[in-house]
Image 1 (tube, one colour):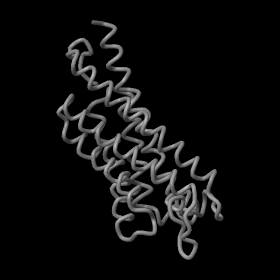
Image 2 (image 1 turned 120 degrees about the horizontal axis):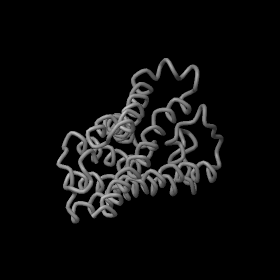
Image 3 (image 1 turned 90 degrees about the horizontal axis):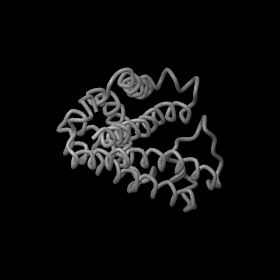
Image 4 (image 1 turned 120 degrees about the vertical axis):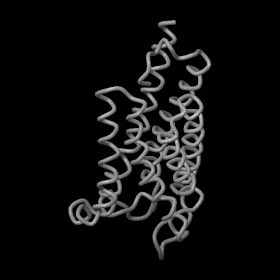
Length: 210
């Protein structure tokens, strides 16, 4: 965090470490869960033209259960729960509501996407928007907890995600719906990984100095 590491109380260090670990692992789970879902998906699917959520429930008329749906839904539920818990832990340790509220909404979005697959309208779309908007905002507002130059990298991740969300009509003809969605989601996932590692590193360095 952007405070002198030696000033972090021992109990707070443990909370920061736990929060960072949950962020890091949730990012890993999301990324590898999507890849694993793609491996086991049995219907026609490609990165350019297929939504990620098709891994959970194919678009009509091919709504049939498959292993990828189990992988995808469990991935979203587990990672969403982890992000929500991490957000509350970060709030306890930092007191930064501006950062933590978007993070908790981000996790709620993943949780909802896992509970309501793509064929369940309108709830899947609602929670997907939570992921896309809150994730971008979380990456941007995390600058309040991060020192330079990393805070500018995190802010750029959020700006990229929101740009691809609100300007998707410009990108879809070039990248397809699938490519555009991945450019929207993956910067947020990479932020989770990097932010989690940053929190763990901050706490670890603090422990070594005390």
